[in-house]
Image (cartoon, rainbow, N blue to C red; front, side, top):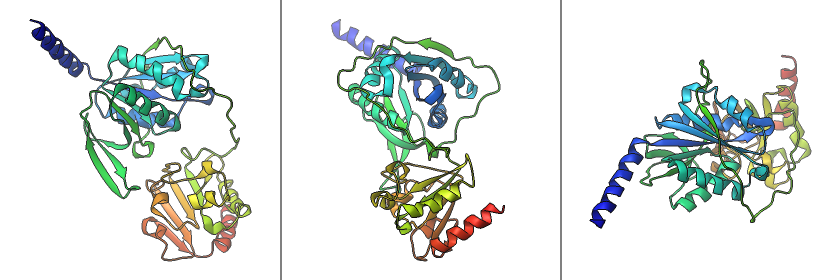
Length: 342
């Protein structure tokens, strides 16, 4: 009799999990209560799983404003928006967020939990996966079905198709591989629900964050990126790139290769590549960049790639839509002057 009861419980549990398969999206809040752009790409990936979607927002304030913005995406099948608002989430430390996210999972039994490939999600979701004893799936570039996904390996030189048999699948999404979700036309039907969110973190403490203020957009959201390599030779010469970017206010910014960052020509938050940021702007201009596979891994999804290099055999020309062989110290000033006249 006892064994029959166990079998009955297991069978019931299996049926229930299959019938009520659902997805939780980690919706990121940025300064001013706005929704992080990578969340919109994550919603597109989540929608491809073709099941109900709940979202959770962590923050110290203005989570209601973020939720109201999220409700506008009525085409994404969002059923519920969970608000975890507490002063203890200052800095959104993974040690504070993960236990609360674990409680949410235990109460709702989601089959899929998704987040963008951001610093926040990549800090929280692997911890959650460890606590649930499942394998996290990172940097997904395609959703094949509810258990199969694609992702890049070997610095983007190969595509891996994988299948997960875990009961809960923890996934980070490469934002550049999915279109941003579009706002719907109807009124939002998603229910907003506050959750008990009292973080208990005695492992770490948020002290401060130093942010460089700039009128230029962030690398991840810029439509145009002028990226420089070691061939620029000095920190002062990076001004050539800033002068170009300033001709496109609100649209263009400056990036760099790892070699340029390691040489001290610019700050490390401008680094693009496998160990830097992943970008996919409408226009990517690689200036004095040879095209190592580690750099290409971070910008290969750009809509249009332009390469300027004096070495005609540089690997960057192999992936460039347009190439110009020449001395960048002659090309850039001339290009800047001609663009000023437009």
